[in-house]
Image (cartoon, rainbow, N blue to C red; front, side, top):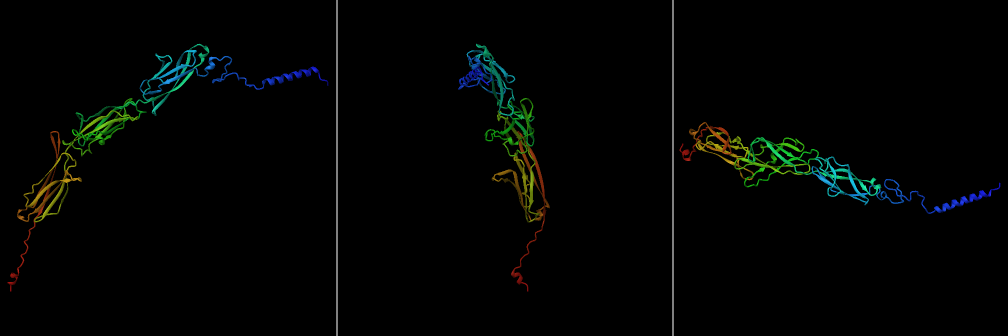
Length: 437
């Protein structure tokens, strides 16, 4: 078959044109968006003339600076947000609240329209189980007057954080209540009795209802030359747990026990004590201290006669010994012991008492060792069949202008065994022995 010359010519022109087109494309990118800029929002603006929206893609139209992110519970604080437009074509703007704490206010500063102020007084217990409570906020900056209308659609979102801390206010002791009589600054308590009292206090900084602790510590007045006092803290015990009685109010009950206060004595037979009361909250903040003063009024106690011993039966012509102790269990006041006058007893008799010795060698005037020594006469005509030996012990305590006394009397009947002492047989001499035949 014979080819048509016109068809060949047309094919040749097509091939030449295709080849020229391929050559023209060599060395150039085939990306159709190469002359466009893709912004963060995945939009493809036209790149012929750079528009304001191309210059400030996303939220870069505004810059901002924050001053003061730290707030405290129950205190008014202000966060300042200074906004700067990054284009001279933005002539005014506003900042709106998207997410701010309940009770807070966002408003433009009266001194500088580029500054917005977020004012807030975080309520008590904003901070829960930690020392700092972060509170997130969200604001929106957008232009309100622009030289280019296309900028009016751009805005900036501010996401920031306020950090709230607890106001470490000091706990406050409101009162100490007791039905015990108070004379001046002192509570007067009769020895052997207890004093119940209640401490009422306030605390604004407690976490999640954690009870502040009431502490009793040494008042450190032992060396006060004018009015020395011993530490009462070890004699105070709690009788209840802390009880919440209001939004920030607490109370707790205690008891001062006197049963173990035996050796804290002053010259007027009373014990003077004191303690310092402090309240410590969960932030380890300590209240101002309050002093409590106590005066223990001692009562006399019945003396005890004990350890009575003798060396056997009382018998004429022999020595008889009786020993015993007289004690007052409380080392207060005076202990007096009176014994029967035995100076007229037949023979030779003495009855004495002397203070016992402590381990340090000092006299213990509240424990006395007593002894009766009697060499019984062998003259039966002078002896009775029994003798009464009496012990009278008195424990005396001075209370003001009154002397209180407690007595113990003991009578010991000593029966005397009368024994006739026979004279020794006369020894024979040699002369008398030789005179017999």
